[in-house]
Length: 164
Image 1 (cartoon, rainbow, N blue to C red):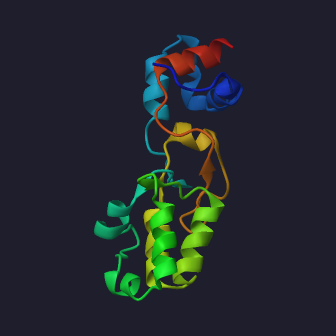
Image 2: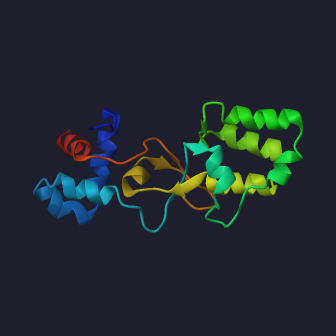
């Protein structure tokens, strides 16, 4: 089912038309082939901030940078800091694309603290070609972008955009 907002159709159409790799597919209206390419990871890697980070992601995963969570550091935080940490995840997941969330993590643990570094590493991922179209920022591992659309596109998204 299509989920790309109609306000994004023009940008999608422009990006597809600007990519010479899609020219022959556009000519025959092969929307499924185009959408398959758009849903692949963008190469070279284009980094974006995650919008759905869980505590278990942070606690139990090793980041792409090789960092891990330290419960010893967490245990050393004050009760108000531990409470603030819990509030970040009050809905079960945190949106690391929100500047106030990443600022809060730095305030709770300290900017150069190992847990801050780990959280920021877990809070990013690589984007698909389609997601990159709707992202803004540097897109580097050190400075990930934010997305205005997240997820896979479908053939109906592409069809509607190309016919708009």
